[in-house]
Image (cartoon, rainbow over all chains, first blue to last red; front, side):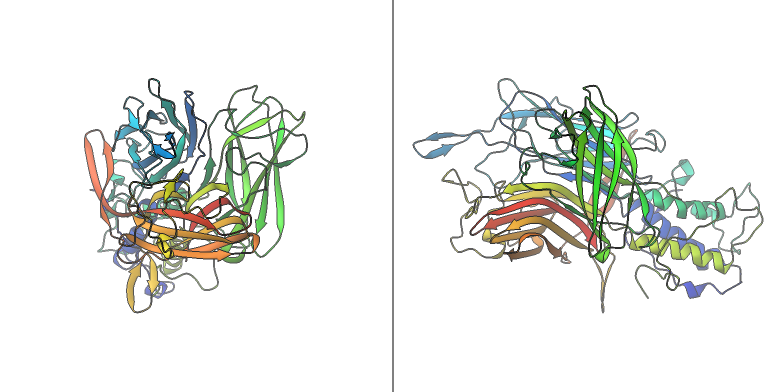
Length: 371
Length: 221
């Protein structure tokens, strides 16, 4: 029987448990199960929301990568895409526009599939590009289903959104990409999904682990609480995975990227985040740092961590030459939640041993499983 | 009672609990373990705040660009109000704004003597400001920012040169949940009820050099 997910948090008073006494399913376990289900299936992350830059009209297919470690409670995710488009002709000072066409294809991981929204996002449908004389956006939506629990490996998955031209129409890239996990109405532990099988919490008894063939819900409840850590915090930026459009640096000295498209090399931009204090504000929680890059030589990546109201520190790691192909660097990153309101400014520096270029298309920081 | 549940006094971290293999058959859950599990879940609830968006900004912007025209020709779907204030300071076209999301709002913010409401969304912009106005707006679903259709709006003007500007958006109760497909596989579909909203971030420069380098947004309590 599916377990319904509350749409709001379920508060519990500690005083409801009398010290040194056994606790009952009704006084404790059912509320705790509802809390765990809320964390597993309701407050799900917004995985990525980025605004790539407009490119000069091209007939080349351009792909923006997405890195996603799906939450166990998520079964369907919403993907939205806005297209760029600034084509016009100027007739004696008067602008005339027409909407060119493009296709958008979403590549999903093994075990997952695409579900139609406003479009199928499979590259087969011709979509209108943006009209520069319109302020409102034309947003195309689609969904990614994750199949049954276990169909998609419980690890970071690489997805891709590819925009391409249609016929003689060139395109100017993507204006916005979002992937967000959709809260579910029920969890189904009876069919292998995470969560607590509510009938296992027998309301007539103290909560104890008696007959393992029936189960009293204790291991399920403890595991469900630990599993709530697998609803993972995501931070991510991304651009086109193409050496003519990706962010880049060509130097043997560590320093800021050329943020191709808008920011360029004008400044070293900072991204402000709120660091979740899983293990408190003084203990540094570990996150997965995952970067998609292309380099012909080994190099160094530096994450500059400027804790708001405190000091700055660097986290350095090395990446290996990818021999001219796009590859994934994966390391761990320690982030402190000790800043004012747990906030931190992040910036990203790169170098290569021989000053050859390193290209970067995506940087993601994802909370690791730490039960 | 705190909407998010009680935590153990002075403990602001998750505490370790026995794994299912460490748990011995026949044991009962006593109040101590129950309190720890409750504490962990309440702590988890507090720390479930999410990153909403993170992106590079437009870089250096063109001063006096309100976006009601493109290359001198009026836009087709918005009207220049001539006098500008608040939400109508800009047209919210692609020259003057970016759209992020949608994301699904969570209703677990305590308001004294009122029912719980939506979490606060904090927008942080890394800018160089000679005289720069930045604006942020939340709308239901994929709606466009308009005086009759937004659920939160904030703006600020800065002359602080290089700085991080912060705008806190408190969604109004007008933000409503709607039926949303949440499962669709193997012929089985399911709907849940959730409040989708889009975040719009805009800019307007008056004088000097004005740049928006990055746009970040996350939830805060």
